[in-house]
Amino acid sequence: MNTQEIINQGEVCLLHTYNRYPVVLDHGEGVYLYDTEGKKYLDFCAGIAVFALGYNQPEFNEAVKGQLDKIVHTSNYFYNEPSVSAAKKLCRASGMDRVFFCNSGTEAIEGAMKNALRYAYNKDGQNGHEIIAMQHSFHGRSLGALSLTGNAHYQDPFRPLLGGVHFAEFNNLDSVKSLVNERTCAIILEPVQGEGGIYPATPEFLQGLRALCDEKDILLICDEIQCGMGRTGSMFACERYGVKPDIMAVAKALGCGLPIGAFLTTEKAAALAPGDHGSTYGGNPLVCAAADKVFDLYESLHVLENVQKVGAYLYEKLDELAAANDKILAHRGVGLIQGLEFSVPVAPIIQEARDNGLILINAGTNILRFVPPLIITEEHVDEMMKILTPIVMK
Image (cartoon, rainbow, N blue to C red):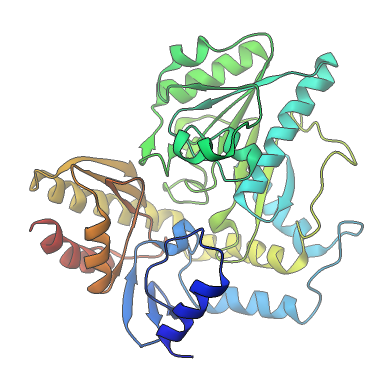
């Protein structure tokens, strides 16, 4: 099928839950993508913060191919070496103690919620515990994760959602404290809000939440699905604040393209017992072989150091663009998760950039989001700015 035939068939066969761009991607190499007509794109989206190591990474590919020839799935009635090895590396990288592997970030949030509720139930034997989440947050689209997502646009068509969720103002500790009561079992937040507009937590806020949770024996849940796995220059964003959560949700770059998520707990917070939770595909050898290799490659390729260096360069260049353009209201972010807030919708900018070989995405109507592969160089930043600047400066 040619490009248009693929698009036409997709419109017939696929459920229309996405407004897809009229592009059929065919393959990738490094930080570039190529469509079925041979057009080359510089990728500053990375599959929405997934392809941290870029495309067609040979060592990653060999690890997956090698496991494919051995065994792909076993069920969780048995151990498998890739899942144990990946779990050990994930615990070491995060400072957490226990891992539950699943298939996506949304599933990681679901498991984190259940663990928090089970923790509270184990303490007092009561139901009806509550969770505090943040306004403008995004945690996923299942009914449980959606219940924690502080955006009515996503929630309204699917009410009633889970009860017992209250929304505080992000970066306002007093707003959180005003919602805490004897039924509160957990507080959840993204250390850097992604879909909500690229808003980093302030140190006072995240450190204050940690102190509040310690005082009240409430579990602190950090959603590191988008901002974790090195994207801020630390392996996990909460490290930048000197804060260790009780539960952490990860996904996206954990598998660098293969579908994997996980929630992690400290030993104290690990409340789920056999039969409380499960996942048919979670922790299967194929995807865990990928995740296991990801940690090796982060180390050998010095990914965190690269994010710190190139992220600072990207921040400098975007700051210069923001200072030169009245339509840009704000520049936020850290490392390789940054955003430009405009006074106008950014969809036309994204379209023109794509026409000129640059893939960007939004975070809300008026915000350009920059979440490229973590292996980009300063030269790639310059290439991106060369395309973007004349579009924005019109």
